[in-house]
Structures are given as C-alpha cells and as structure tokens.
Image (tube, rainbow, N blue to C red; front, side, top):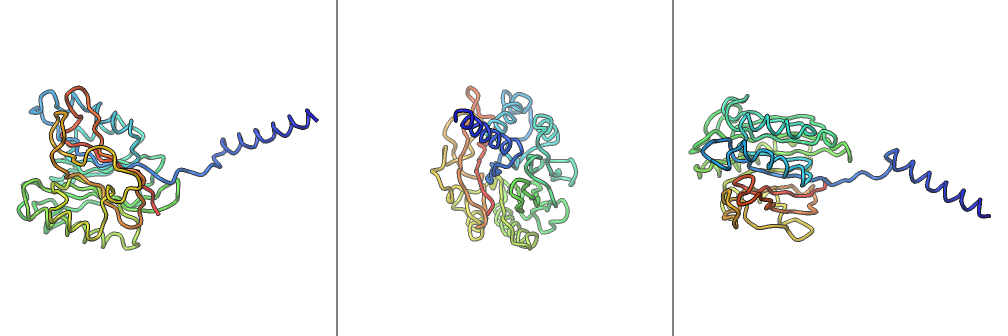
Length: 285
C-alpha cells in the first residue's frame, strides 16, 4: 500500500513538473506600460547631466519591469545609451527635426519576448503632418510615434501612440490633441485597443487634455486599485513635491487598468529626470 501511495505521489509531481516545464501554465495577460520624459542631454544640467544619470534611468525602467514604454526628449546619444542598457527591448522612433536622427525622439520601446511590431509610423503635430515642420504657434517641431503590436502572450492586437506637446504654443497644444485623435481614428480602422503616452505640457483642466478625455480615459481614473505616488509628475530634478501633472497614460474602452503609479525613485537629492515616470499595469480586453 505504501509503495502504491508513493507511486501516485510521484506521478502527480511528475505531471505537475512536466506541465510547468512545457509552458502549459496560463500566460500573464497584463503588462506594464510607462511614459517617461527623460530630459534631453545637455551639459547645462551639471550634476544632473545625462552621462551622470543614464544608468539611473535605465535602472528604474528595469526595476519596475516596464514591458512597453514611451520616452520624450531623447536625443540620438540617449537613444543609443538606452538601447545598449536595455538589450531585451526593441524600439521605433525618428528624430523630430529631419525624420531620421536629428532632434528629439519620441520613441516607443517594447520587450522583444512579449511583443511583435506589425506596423509603425510617425506624424508631425502640424498642418503638414507628413513632413518635419513647426505646428501653429509651437516653439519646436513635435511628433507622435505609433506602433501596431501583437501581444505574443495573449495573441491580442493593439496600438500604442507616444507624443510630446509643445511647451510654449497654446494653440499648438490644442490643435495637437485634435490631430492625434484624428490620426487614431484613421489608423485604427479595426477599432483595436489603444494606448496613448506622453508629456502633454497641459494640466488636466486644460483644453488639450479635456479634448482627449472626450474620447479616451486617464489610466489614473480607471485604476482598479488606489493610485500610487503623488498626483503631480513635473517639477525639476530636486527631490521635492512635483508641481504639475502633465504626463499621462490614456486608454480607450478596450483596455483594463489594474495598477497606476507615479514613481518617485531618487538617488540622493535628485530624481533621475526632471519628470517623474508614470507606470500602469494594463490588460488588453
């Protein structure tokens, strides 16, 4: 009898072990998405210049296990540094000043083991969105990057858009919000789930964000658990309460939000960037 019992126990353990090894367990359906203005590379930042904080930025992304993230203000050298530090990620983005390597990138990084890029593109936030150029009263060229993804774990499809609105042009910000929604409607003809990340240089009460909220939702508002961290996202490198909420992750109704947080990781007296990253754990429906 004892021999039979031991045989049954051994068989159960063997089946369980085989199921685990052969990958029969249900894949995790949710993933972590982040938006992060990493601050451009300029020696004017002194102790907070990019070469002194690039490892902290990459370390933060790794520690919080982002699977998909959009950056803003990344110059070519910063793009190369992030790619070298995060070899498990692939990326797509172009320089805003020439559509190649000049100027800041609004790049989307994605974990290669989890996502497959099916299609991608960039448009400029201006009356001539198919080529580099200033939009309305903007001080700088501004772009929006987009990728159509297949989630390898769940076999579901979705779009991710990533952008950075102008910091001076009030009209440019308002028109940029309208333009992005227009392009989303044109690109997403299959009515798939959508994610929009970025630094919008606009508070929630401002017209650009209110325009977006007529179509999309703020992940902070849709989170199933209490949001983590401060409300505000921008206020400089110094470790103190941020002053403005201008960085967001938006979704359409086909995305579920499990967690949302504004991350306050710091090193000594300074944050890794002058913006705090925003992270949400989401599930494609």
